[in-house]
Image (cartoon, rainbow, N blue to C red; front, side):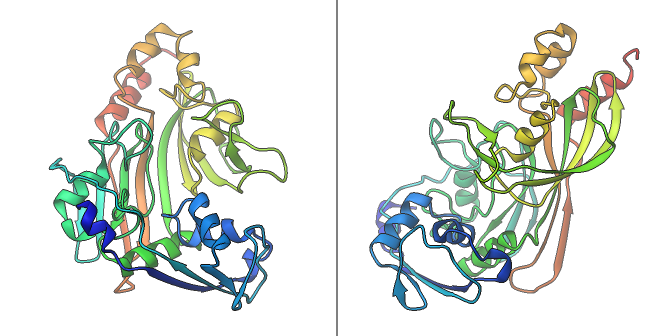
Length: 327
């Protein structure tokens, strides 16, 4: 996609009605859930410039939306930015005219960001399907949700604007099922449960998120169940009800069970005290987290779609070694 092509994109018009469960949310937070490709900073600028109206009137960005209010937004074309397509092989799980489901390897960044502008899934997808240029953000073509660099597994991309809007709406309504498998330090008790703790950016670090104090941050809900207990390690399945940045990693670390290989949230620190385990984790090539299952409704046909990804060798080999270790 060239800079000229980005500049030629048409403006977007958005209209939506506030549902009862959403009543009381800040306008910028509500809009960010409906238009996730827009940053909160850009949403604030749109509100302040009068591009966002509530029942036909201008409001402030801190306005609390109420049930039944109609929100109309005019989103001008983004500033011209160029994301070069890169012919990087993709492991395609499913593809049609509307969606693309990819099994992302650990080590690949989903889209360009601070410190990484090449070798991304977005650039690879753009080379594979040039028609996604202009779908979503200019630096995130087709990207509906993301996986961390160190996480492997299933991710869906939209190939058309209609598909993008339908899939982001499903995510906002929590109608997309995302199932993850991870390895964590320690013995997780009980065997299943729900972690309902808000998450916000860590005030002490630009790269970390953290469980926030009551009334702060965004609500984050993770359901988990223990799959297997190994010496010093537990295999856990997690299902996301929300999709906050680093959600699984933050939530499990908050219980005292950081993920293996997680430098940011304490996993690697624990491993430094266990040289044998550290040597095994060094081979992971990322965090011991894999997006193993993905379910959503096809954005055009309405057909339920369900995909699964086998546990990759990088994690399976570690599990096999731990199974054979003395207890």
